[in-house]
Length: 297
Image (cartoon, rainbow, N blue to C red; front, side):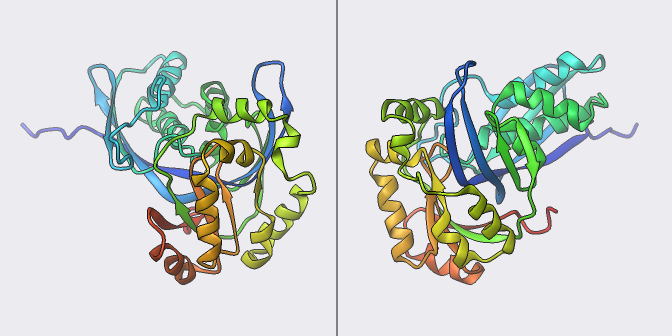
């Protein structure tokens, strides 16, 4: 008798960066209205999904120096699998194995990326036949960043993150600095509220339209000075290391620097891959990445 090798569905779960993040105000549902240009980057977790007798998640952590793979709450990959199972009569068990490379609570969307990859993978594994719009609907219920991570392409996000508009952005080379602490998204937005909302941002004159136009041209030198994040000031007030990382990137030659998402990671924009590698060599916990990942479409 020939042994049957269990089928494994493999997905790359790419991290994201926010080229700009504008916070527009509170919403009645408790979230905040935002506008942001979100780019997937080459840093990625790897998600392997195979059939099993029950539904479980195993995380192999390579990203966290502390070994902490969860920053509180239920694993979003498990939430994603349960959401698909609820819609799929043929759903069964599954082992979801995640090789973590994206730092936790770093503003890079790691948990959301894992959830997006899991939605797609278990849909295929179980033969559910859910379409892209159905997966996006499930993703929206799981987390604000999940729809953008499902898109796997540059998108302009609005609402609380659930409304997406595709944007043509060529690959840029970035240097990513990972701070040795995490920031929970709810904390960052609460600090924004406590500092007076728009008064805390320090970017009243920033124009998202100019950022989008510069990003579309592929001109890193023009884009660099336009990067902004309204959550940066309230996070820096509590974690000055974020500001120090920005200064270090700029001193090393980055065209611009900005905190990604709710932090704590900081990115610097480089001219090209060689320039990014040169900047990263001189900074602790820095790595060169590409966004959007080349060859991903």
